[in-house]
Image (cartoon, rainbow, N blue to C red; front, side):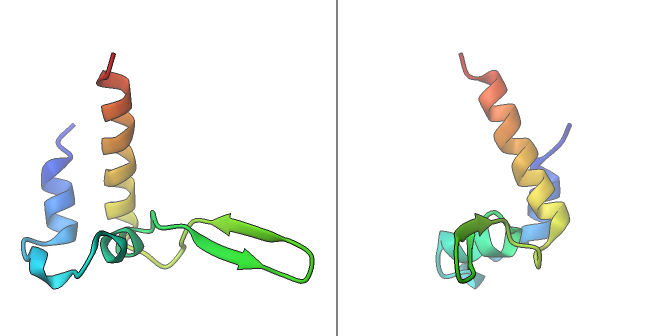
Length: 69
């Protein structure tokens, strides 16, 4: 599976466009979003994101974990 071209196509080639890694994580939907109500606090994943980029980053992370001894 070719993940680098997928990430580059979704992220773009201008890295100066993003100020920090948190902004890229929010764009991809991998940055945790706190959610609270009157009785509890939870963390969930972001719904408003570029879903193909999130999928490519999740696959990249999964394959990285699988290939490490």
